[in-house]
Length: 312
Ligand code: G3I
Image 1 (cartoon, rainbow, N blue to C red):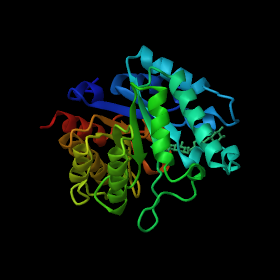
Image 2: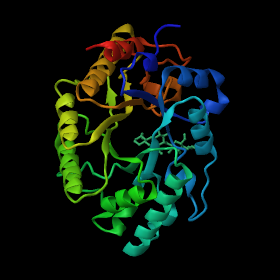
Image 3: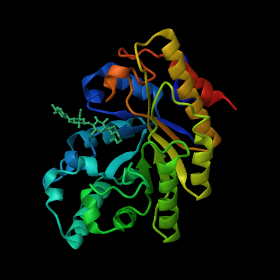
């Protein structure tokens, strides 16, 4: 019963994990989440496909259970995610009219955010910037039909639905300084200049054991977004191994976790969330990406995170 992540975190920094139905199926998993984390993100339960697979029919079962459980344990919830092309059900792709798409987006955002008034942090728009050269907005998103300002529209609808909520843009492969983070920086800077209600940016940080936090200039990147006045969260952290979990590989993995959390703290981030809890619970389970092994035992990465939480 050594130190825990949440017990080691400095004031103003929540440590979180993405959670699933395992919370209600596996008591050991639930106990681990309650012990270690001060924030949870429903991994899939709040996505469009899960909550509104058919237009106007809202299904909240697992998401309700997660929010109730978290509230009972004094754990914050990051709402994830309102507008994401990947979880859009088929019927959204049938819509060809901008006004109708704007109305459908607004209705979905309002439904979720008013159903969960106690959730005051939301990933409003997820992964809108493409990986293509120049990093334009994704052309394959059904929401593009709503017009080139569909991101601004989503944030305005979210702010109207809950003026108290903190609203985030969230994306991957933008953790360091690179072409994609430059494009996201320009996008958010322009939205802020237009007065769009956006309060923070989430960096997913799906990494692997060879990732070099210093060479990628993560601290500098997070700081430039902070300088725009935005909160910074690390939202989906995991660090895959390229081979078996040998002592050396686990040490390299621990190092990446340590350096990433240190960069996050140096830039004044306020949430550091893992994308899963145990290796077994991960979307990339075959690559041992999390700080707890299949049986929930802490790996070297756990001690490395605690050192980073306690460090200067
Ligand atoms: O629940 C069904 C189950 O009934 C069915 O038997 C099974 C068969 O494939 O599928 C299950 O749903 C899967 C769900 O995960 C739960 O395991 C979906 O097919 C699968 O697409 C879904 O994958 C999720 C993915 O997002 C797509 O929504 C991953 O768990 C989740 O980790 C991943 O998370 C995303 C973030 O939201 C955004 N950033 C990237 C990140 C990783 O892709």
